Length: 323
Image (cartoon, rainbow, N blue to C red; front, side, top):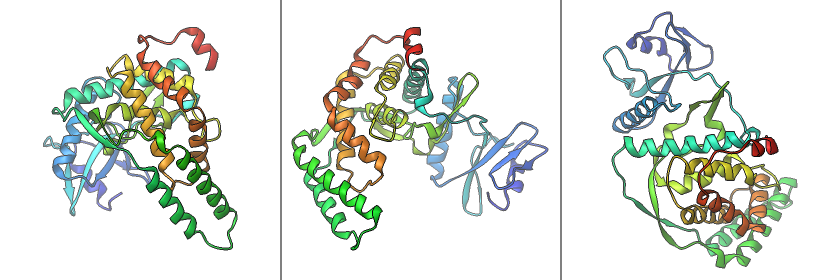
């Protein structure tokens, strides 16, 4: 929090301002607020503010910046830029704690965000050419990383060596599974980080979607697939909860129209990117790659079939089965 934060807040029509120690939050007569600094340019920050206002006005759980007394949403002090937001009092939940119905509703929320972003922002180039990493480059990186490991090796370095050797073998065996080098896909505006860490829940569902600093243009199917992977991954040899993934993707289909081929392609591409990311050494990432590779075709079909199905709400039987 900047040293002059209390003085900065005088630009807003607030009273009874009380800082919350060791945070950027304040208790005020209008409720709790949070002062956020942005490193975006002025134009980029103001564009983001317009987007947040539009999403909030559309009834989505997105906090809009609070205007100052003279109507501005961005203020400058000592060469830095700040905006003030209402504090969202909610809690995080793991995607694996959600019922099937809640997964479906969360997917529909992401679909609504995609639809409203499309309406709120200027049109973008409708296709992206997305390159795919090369297996040979990943193998070369794995060799460099293995050569850089110290001798003698501790347990952590020995584990890294085993993971790199395993990944090297997989890359050589699966080199012919590489997605097209440059694929044209439908693009639009995406949140850029729709994950459990950026979603807040209240008593009746999602009360806040945070983390809008990553807003950008990107393949829409790519965000859907990556979000499902982040939300419903076990972090171990169990891989992904495909029942929850399917419900999430079905929910998205109720609010935003893509097609099964794009979803399948996005899932294939994400698997390949994870396979080629040899620098990522976490045991969870390695376990996900092993699990996904062992059942690649089935996993891709789950992503695609869920979107190809007629959109519908989850049944009570489905809810009782896994909630």
